[in-house]
Length: 134
Image (cartoon, rainbow, N blue to C red; front, top):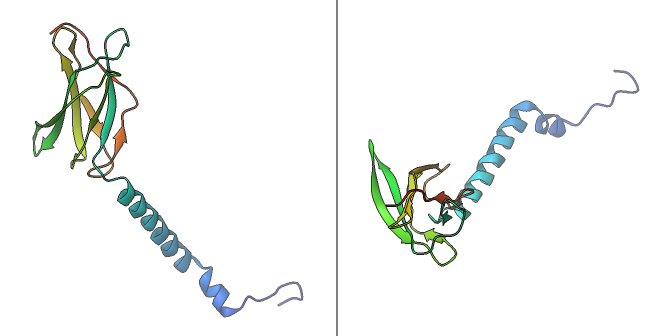
């Protein structure tokens, strides 16, 4: 060993090797993910409903469909407020679809929403768009 090289203490060499760092990093990532899930698993789905012109649609019915083995079944409904916003609570699924309709205004397509975990809280980025009179 030359004069420029300094040997690290044994405890430090053991602590900063890949057999300690990799499992420790994985454990930290798992702990952070579980913390995130625990604070975002209330089953709340929030979104908006607009007409073809982009205006909010009050009193539209929003239907939440959940995957039941091989088919989607209707689980719950919500009604939009005067600003076209809706809130669905108690969603316990991770694979859902949403659709909206209002007589005389139209209906939207069923929009698939894939969540990362069961009962994940989510706010839709895009509104449900009603088109065609029903």
